[in-house]
Length: 204
Image (cartoon, rainbow, N blue to C red; front, side, top):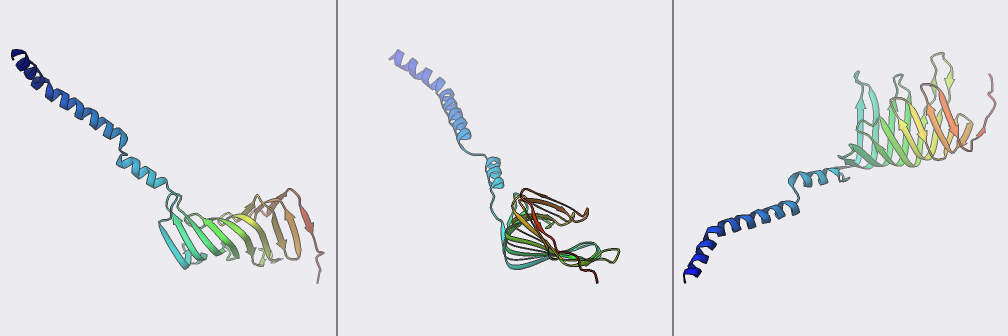
């Protein structure tokens, strides 16, 4: 009896320590196996999911003088907050440079940054620069780029493509596997299999 009572006394003495140790182990396991709030938030933040949609829309931007700088139209658009990009179906983009010259871009699908200054056109992509008159008064014919993938930079007036592209300037036409066009610098680089058809200039 005395041995049993001694054993019970010892058990009563160490029972709180055993319970606290068990609770500590259980808490440690729970912390290790349960995702934290920050972990859940991090996983949710990196998911590439749209946070809003637009249907049959038109978005316009203006410069500091209130002049129309660009206009974006589409059948449907999806905004992705993780990249702050807009994916647009059946897109039509009209943009004006500092001189008011119009450039129009169309494609089955487009991906733009937040201010539409950088646009990737995909599927039946076409960029058309309207006819202009240079500072010296010389007429500049219309120019267009066509391909399946065109990367355009509105502010720097550049068009790039790593896929086959067709360049048309007036009646002249060129094809190439890759292209880099700089409108401000008036420089075009065409690479790969390059072919061209040039028509003679008819003087009045």
